[in-house]
Image (cartoon, rainbow, N blue to C red; front, side, top):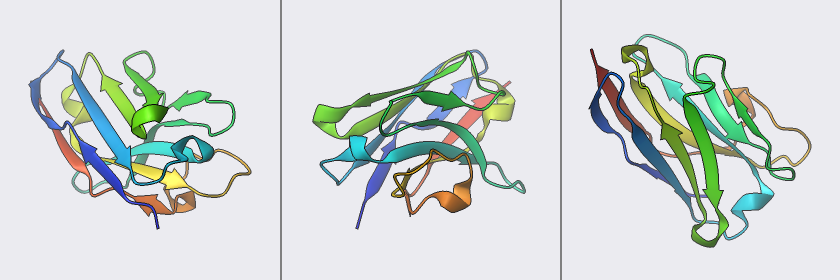
Length: 125
């Protein structure tokens, strides 16, 4: 069983920054593919970015590329999502997730096995 706990959400003005954290209960966090997703009211959960387990390659949705950055601190079993130049359309509940399959990285939420509780990000105009 993997437990994930997100933190760092909040209210920020457009153009501002936030850093989300995802702390995992597993000691081998780096052994799993990891993804960040978000869900706005009335919309489906969408891929934001992720980190491949073996290569540590990062992947981003086109909508956040150049503004968001994912990093990992293996000593703390924590993955971060640094969000800069935030826009009102970034407003959503943000989730981190772990994919235990070790074959391929995936951008599909249905391929992830464990999820955090989510943290609200609200960007005002």
